[in-house]
Length: 140
Image 1 (spheres, helix red, strand yellow):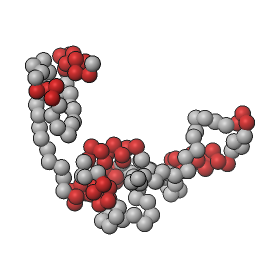
Image 2 (tube, helix red, strand yellow):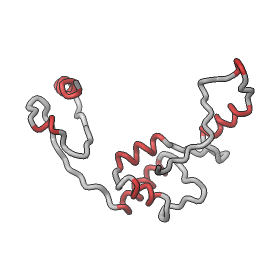
Image 3 (cartoon, one colour):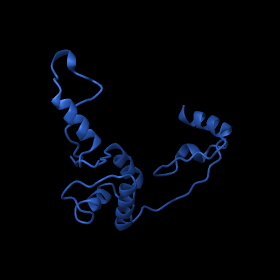
Image 4 (cartoon, one colour):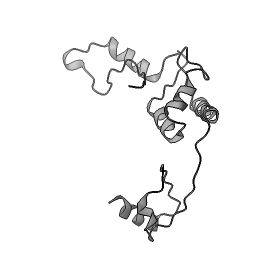
């Protein structure tokens, strides 16, 4: 269903469609309906990967947790864990975005503080604000 839908979309699209993949999908080898250009990129080195993570982090206003530094065990651990795959890293950064405000607390922390101070018994529970105390991604 995906490939026929992509073929139909590519016929109607007025701009390029960009797909990323670890390897060229076999469905494109024998497909003469979808025109494509295959561009192979190398993964960045760990240093380049850390530089890019840091650049994105700064431009998005993300902060590092206290005690996490850029070189030792911080961004380099992220780069190593994800084998410098920037697609995966950026996806995780988007998911675990931690934006610090002037008060030094993230938006999530501020909402959690407000929710935990409210009476959470009975009908006063507001399901629009789940109680998330902290997010600590880790390897299992």
